[in-house]
Image (cartoon, rainbow, N blue to C red; front, side, top):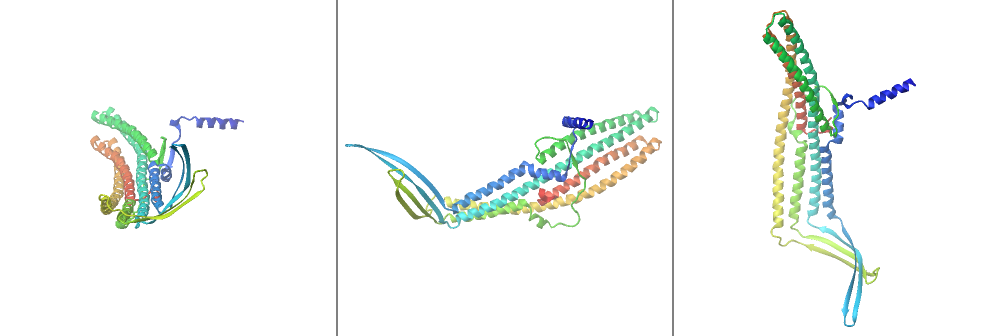
Length: 423
């Protein structure tokens, strides 16, 4: 009985635990990717664009199939004459249909253009996915950095506090001047402010993470991961081959192909169009009507004069095609340039991490030695505080270098056009 009572108490405590005291949700990078893939509004909107283009193709392709309509009519007519008035009723119902037989490939070109538009919308979805991945990765890096920054600021506060205690001891012993004490107090206050600022930065980073995962509500989050670049930075990538697979380029190619089919359709509009038509109806003066009516025929139509409409349509379609060709060339060049820039930036960032790590190691060791020397009077305050400042700066620089290397990696992956599925 006591066990059951204890379980109930624990359950009530957990359910009604204040929100601020609840444990933070720990998310790995893959957890964030999976959630964003399902919930991000930009991805959902891009999927709807694909559905729109698919429906548009269905609208265009419908012209290739028979078009059948049904009709039902009833009317009455009253005629007045010298001998009186008479009333005549009329009823009719039936089916009529038309079928496109020939239009010089205009409709088929429209269908092919619609198919290319579907391809373009799918590539647009991939481009959106690549953009979402970059923003999500940036948010994840920011959260990792904010978490680590909070730890570092607390370490820095401990350093400044220990320094202040040491300087205070020497000052009240008459071994240090007041300027050193005031400097130590200012450094300690700045370190305390750094903790507060890091805490606020962490709140913003969590909000950014929630937004990029597509969540509606804010929640305490903790990112689980390491500051490790997984992309191999050795060798020389084939930028031309990578660029040819970029979704933004493939989208433009599909749009260009659609423009080519639209130009063919514009030329085809100068040719005659042949349609077959037929109908079957029943009519009479009583319901249900019993009289049968049939009709069957062909309709040939050809434009003669429309004020230059079709000529202008051809010119418009040709200009659109030429524009997309140049856009394709420009986009390809831009992608290759971006790939080169991000690849070099990634290599620089990984090299910078190694440099900052060595500086941190050196400044940590110097700090240990200098603190011992200062406490025994072998180093002046001015020299010692410079060494301590270098240590504090090295801690921050190393964290910035680590986060910068991950961001450079994310930029490189986005430049390649990799989507959320890249993982």
